[in-house]
Image (cartoon, rainbow, N blue to C red; front, side, top):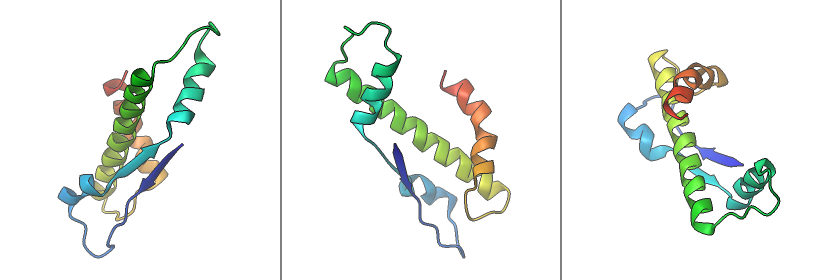
Length: 98
């Protein structure tokens, strides 16, 4: 669904450069299928502008998750983000993105 690419030079990590390195792409078809799966009425339609907006919000959520997880990793002295770093930022993320 989402692809992330983040290349890090293991010897030197500049925290200020992290946001520019996070890239995310989410396919509209995947989001459309997910949304249609939750519609209760089969006649419900999804406008292209609304779909584009939902995809952009999802990209923001993925990017923010990556940034927070990388921040946790850097604070702990790691140069690679692990699943545990993502887990640590999820509770606050869920409060920020209700």
